[in-house]
Structures are given as structure tokens and as C-alpha cells.
Image 1 (cartoon, rainbow, N blue to C red):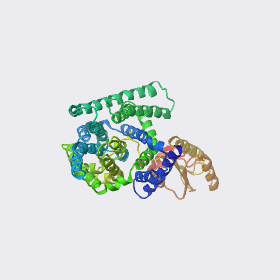
Image 2 (cartoon, helix red, strand yellow):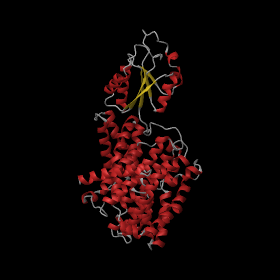
Image 3 (spheres, rainbow, N blue to C red):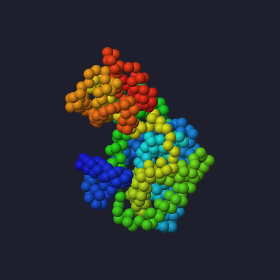
Image 4 (cartoon, rainbow, N blue to C red):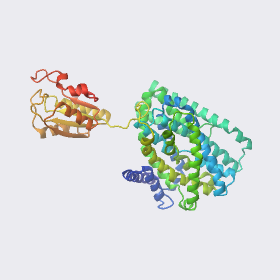
Length: 533
């Protein structure tokens, strides 16, 4: 088992990076790796790992749902609430109905079996949509109207409806005890699962804040993350036995944490982003390993045709009805095509169940589920970042709701004077606190106004001093001559520095002048903070 997990993580990471270098989504590499090392070809994965694939997928889904909840914006959801609710039901419902009708002609399914297939295919994938929407939020695409938040919430609600429909239809087709009257109770079941899911998420969030913030039973962020992840897993597992949506409860828990304790949410957001690095690889490699190539080949043409009909006929109708009367323009509505159509997680979790339960046509349902993953997941992962700049507006990023993708770079300007050691030491301390990098700018200019003390002109000595003080920090050492005030600012912008550190004028120096005369361009024109040491 350990060998299989190591192989999955190593090969999944390498193949993902290769795809990234080629400009394709890393998950394509992970899926292909799963096919190659899975039972269909290489058969390098231990049976115990394949038998527990559903549990591994639950762990990965927990991570992405927590990331989604910790990134939701209440204000944006309030403004677009009706759109989010409609997106949670209409696209999946219309796509499922159209697929059911098409399957009756393409595969000779009866209506119930067709609807079962529609419920499998109609679900959206949090594994693709959540990371994609969070990345758009960190970059500012569509955040003014809350488009990423609406898609995230709608996707979670959609899975509640789809999983309920799937379980009800499967019960009918396998001769379960449910009566036909259960169909009329479906709306009540959906509402009950949503209400209970939100309530449970709120209650667990209160418990987490009480334990970690008020009682301070945890000493560091790792312990906080351990508690939150454990409770999130329990929420998903217990949802299999109790009448609430585990997916929605997990996302709601993250949402209420950010509403009730934003500092805790910021810490957790970073840690769950780290967890997703491994969870993403495991999820998609095991997804590829579960695909049966023979069944795929047998349903190639009809399967792709069925998916196209469901997407362009069924889901498009649902998107139109969901955004009707909203303030979305046609470009933003068109973005739902790449942004809200990827399928992977739910299909991987339930696609094989009809076959294992002996449903007639179960092997076809599994094959269509596999095709939906292979086609829409890679395309969705590629299309979301590709078409967002073409169809959405770029707005200001709210760093309190999502991690902003940036690195901390400090520019330390030194000239060999008495302040050199202090500037480098301060820069090193700031870099260690923020896991940042340093650009060391040595100004080798004899008549530069920073000449507050006798300059150390021994460049090798300065480089050795820098190497000792910044031993555990990544840095660049740049030497410039004939510097004017604007040069420092230009270099800071070029390297995207977040802070400029320079030595203060020494009172005893004959060249000491007031700061506003010394560095006017930096102090009065720079948008980058300046620290005088």
C-alpha cells in the first residue's frame, strides 16, 4: 500500500508538471498516470488502494470543499443569491432530463434508467470547479459581481440534488423498499438536506472557534488544521447515514468560520491550499485507475454524442434560466460554458454503483461517466483560466476572502556604509517571517548622497557578508553604479518588491540631508513602502 501511494504521488506530480510545461492542465497528466499504472495496463497499484479509492476520494473532496467554503464572499452571494440557487438546480436538472431522453434513443434505455444516467452525468465537479474559481478570485476575474462565488455555491447545491435523485432512482431500479410516493417527497428531502447541512456546518464552525480561539486548546496552525480536517471528514462520513448534505455542510463550515473568525480562516486557507497539492494528485490518479478501456471503446461515438446533447441542449437551457433577470451580460453568461460544466468527482464516486448493483445498462452508465470525466475535466481545467480574461472583467481582489497569489520580495539597498549590516539583518528577519526573498542592491557610487560613513569598497567582502547573513534565504546580489533616486524605484518595480529597505542618514555625516531632499522620488512617488534602518 505504501509503495502504491508513493508511486501515485511521485508519478502523478511528475506527469502533472510535464503537462504544465506543455501548457495543459496538470490533472490530465494525473489521469493518464492512473490509466497507465492502474489495473487496465501496468497494474502497479495495490488492490487495497483500489478497494479504498472511495475513501481517498472523500478525503480529497473534503479538502476542496473546505477551500471553497473558506473563500466564499457573503456580500457577493447576497447580491446574486437567486442566481446561485437557480444554478444549483436548473442546469443539472435540464441536462439530466435531456440526457435521459437521448439515452432512450441511443441506448434503448427505459425512462428511469435514462434518468439515472442523467443524474450521474448532470453533477458538476468540485475537484475542477473549486480550484478554478478560487484562482479566478485570487486574480480578480469576475469578483465584482461575485461570479466565482455564485458558481461555487451553485455547484455545491447541484450535487445535493443530483445525489438525492441518484439514490432515489437507484432504489426504484434495484427493487428497494421505497414507494412511488417517494418521488413527491423529493423536494422536501432536498430542502431538508440543505437546511440541515447549513445548520450542521454552522454548529461545527462554532465548536471549532470555541476550541481554537476562545479556549486556545491549540498551540499552532497545524493543530487547528488537524481539528478542522478531522471534523470535516466526520461530517462527510456521517452524511452517508444521516439525512443531510455532507458536501454542503463542509462548505458551510468553512463559510461560517470566515464570517465568525476571519484571522482563523486566513490561517486555515493557507494550510488547506497546501493539503490540496497532495489531495489533487491522489484524486485524479485514482480516477484514471478506475477507468475501463474496453467499455470506453464500445461507447466512444454514442457516448460523446450523448454528452454533447446534454451540454449544448440541456445545460445551456438551465444556464439561461438561471441568469434570467440578473445583471450578468452575455459574455458573463457565456463563461458558464467553460466555468460550470466540468465533471469528475461525483461521476468517479457513483458512476460504478449501478453496475455493482446489477442495474441493466450499468456498464454503459459507467462508460459514459468515464467519458464525461476524460472529456470535460481536462477541458474545464484548461478553459476556466483561458476564457476568464476574455469574458469576465478584472476587478480588485479581496485578500480577506482568498489567498492572493504573490511572493514576498524585499529590496535591500546597501552601499558599504555602517548601516549595511543592519539593513541586511533587518531584511533577513522580514524574509524569514514571510518566507520571502531578497534583492540586495549594492550601490557602488563614490559620490552618491548615501555616503554617510566611509564606504567599504571591498566587493568580495560585501558578498561574503551578505552570504553569511542571508545563508538560509534566496537572494540576488546586484551591483549598480551612477545611481540616481529613480533607479532604485525602477529596480523595485522590476522585481515586484513589497518593501524597500535603506540606511538612515547618519547625523555625524557631512553628507546627511533631510529625507525628503535625499530620496524624493522614493518617498513621495513610490507606491512601495520604504523602511529606513
